[in-house]
Length: 173
Image 1 (cartoon, rainbow, N blue to C red):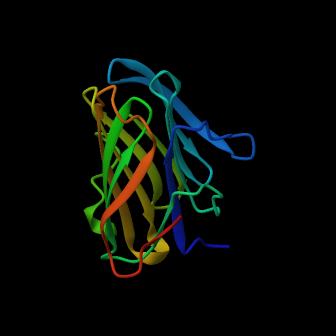
Image 2 (tube, rainbow, N blue to C red):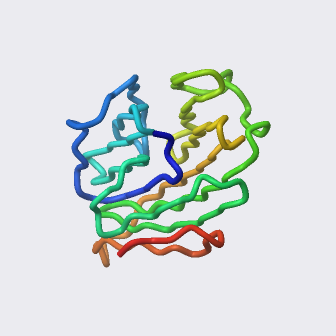
Image 3 (cartoon, one colour):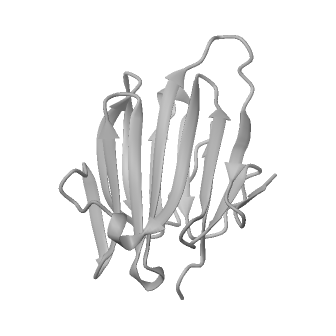
């Protein structure tokens, strides 16, 4: 069955990968700490336990309180700011035509699921990473860019804000 939407959760709570098919992983640095970046059978996973940061993007329904649901439709956009234990992340998501996918050359990690169906992750320095998830059946390249920064020690509760959303994207609270 082909997915019609993806679900994104960014949290301070570790997300279990036990039920996911991990395709490939790599270790990189995020804000000076070791982070794991993984392509999973249903999208991607990023974990940086030292910073208390976990991100899961999946076509499976997620049970987290702060889950953003993104329809796989060209033109959908979302901009999310999430506050975690020690960091703040700002994520921009754009559902673009498939022709906008830049290919595999710049990716740090990539996996091909089928013809023209890829997930790629590119880490840019120690504060930023980008992902692409391509869906040829929808002529779609879902792009995300996340920028992370250290937070001050004050006000360390977790918060997620959707700053702007495409017409059909929604957040479950």
